[in-house]
Image (tube, rainbow, N blue to C red; front, top):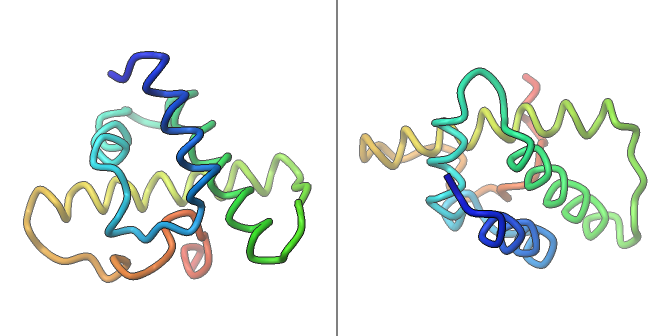
Length: 110
């Protein structure tokens, strides 16, 4: 489990680097996602929400306000992706999302 200071550091990282690729995602985040249980922890919710909102805002060139429902759905699919990426790391099998933006939810609802 990450201590509160590390958690805040990762949330800042998500806000400052919202366009990092899945292959660049911090291993600690992937591991925490995989070990979270049945749903993302409050920290992971905040982390994915921060990265998602900043990613979409940069994509559209302005600060975006989202309904909580949209953020909740994005957090869920980004968390699932992080779990899959962790499995990919553990098995050594390349994930098809390696070159995609980590905080983008595009194509994850299919």
